Amino acid sequence: MSFSNDDSRRGFGNDRKRHFGRTARPTFDEARFNREHPDEESVNRAKRNFNERAPERRGIGSQAHLRRDRDDFKNRPSRFASERRDFGERNFGERRDFSAERTAFDERRATQDNIVPAVGDADAAPQVAVGGIKEVEELLNKTPLQVHRVLFMHKSGNPKLYELQKLAKRAHVHVQQVDSKILDSYARPNHGVVALMNEKELLNWMDVREEFFKARDTGEKKLIAVATNIEDPRNLGACIRSSLALGVDILLLPAKGMCGITPSVARTSAGALEKLRICRPDNLEGAIGELKMAGYQILGLDADTETNLAGFDFADHVVLAVGGEDVGLPPFIKKQCDAVLRIPMKPEAHSYNASVALSLGLYEYARLRIKA
Image 1: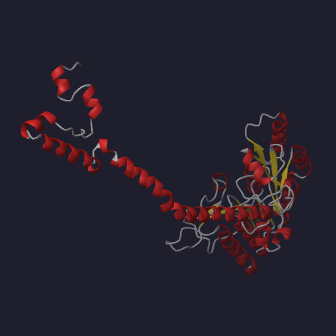
Image 2: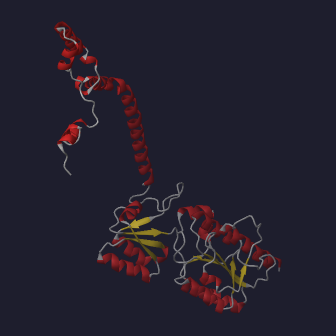
Image 3: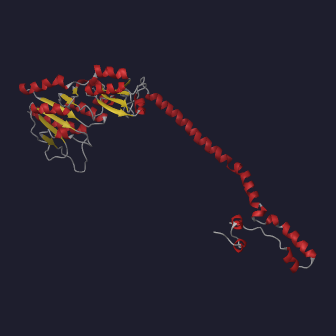
């Protein structure tokens, strides 16, 4: 689009670009003034007055706004210097204190060489974590039932780690792929693998099952407890303590989906951990199936049932299973149960703690057996 000369004179085109958004500088029309004021002295006086008033004008040409900006810039550092100094000292002081506290915290965490806490239990001693390919391989060959789980670096590409993972699966030890940062948080150096250890070596089901099969033939009463889906170490420690107190002969735990036998578990059990026999079958579903075929009564504790625990007719050989508060009994156990029992509870309550539920079930069985 082109503009005519008339448009340009009216302020369009290049002239419009130059003066858009500005106030045009006023000019003195001498010819017009001469016509209106023929006296030459009057003309000169008017010019002088006009020029003297120029600094007072606030147009673009007067540059008064530049002087104001210059003055403001000169005053700005002195105006805000004290506030900047206070702000800098306050924030950088807090950062220095925070760094010192964090350094002290990291030093307290490393209570053992190359070992840091494996579970976020602030007041618990660290779960033993062993890093290194040779070290973990030796544990899996000699004491696999003391290894809770093995953590491998995700997508390591190391063939030695791949062979070690196959060894862990043959030993029925739960394996997990994690980021290298997680491995470093457990043990350093680790060469891409870390084993988390239990506080005691658990029993092999193949070594003890004959004892419970023969008890059915001899008439010796046996009580077996099963704990599944329990992730809180204190909860598991309370289950161990109640099991020992209420006459459980052995406690069965799954190979995965549980917290390990951590120092917090040992402390909560109040010494019961060393006295109670704890077994980790390679296949918990298969072990319960074998007990069912041997004549054991398989019972589960769950709120989703109409059968009441109070007054239930227990057999002499019982397997009593409990699940985690949020998950409950796993389906592979519930489908094998002869009965699922409900503990009386107010409708306002959501559920019992797993250790409390197991304690109530074991107590009801012990009360009736002692009474008989």
